[in-house]
Image (cartoon, one colour):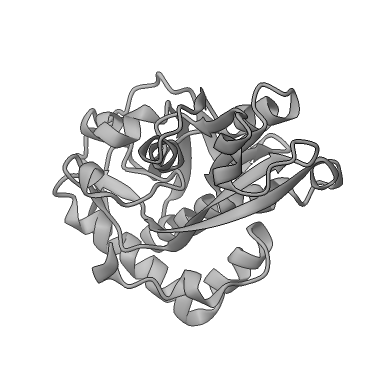
Length: 263
């Protein structure tokens, strides 16, 4: 039942319609901005956008009595909240880390996922850690405008930037880079593929204290409340665990115990 609409489409109602008291930019639907592909959180599978984030937002839409519609947009817009402010989308869901800088432009839901960064390397590279990338003079890749790229730069790397997570993996596969730093759940998804698991390995798992949140336009407290209620209910009734195991892998209890105050 998901609709993928073009990134240049108009947001329509500008928040004039509501569902259960929550303002919506378009009547009858909860419009979500995302950036495709970013498996296992959101990607197009069999002509339909699916993933962990998608499934969680579907729960919110169900609570509001509407359907979710998804708009594919550039990731850099998530930092500024541009598509939220222009009423193109009600919320953004893109495996997005909660940061003080981003909080200046958007309001976040409670954290819904604990994220770590992984360093994935070509098995033939001889690299055995993030430090080894620099020691051996190898190239490091990262997705542009992400906390993984920021992490690399703060540690003295000049990473090759790629537009999407798929492009990051392709850069590794084609030898443009010999190592990449990216969110560990994304790496978990890649390594489910036997060909990827045969060619690449994780050599570092970096606990950066990151937590993912969904974002809304500043001041949209009604939608934040709806998001938080859906996350809380999903964790309480086992739905969160089920979705985690479906999309990400073996359930990590810490992923469900993120404290709102830690955001």
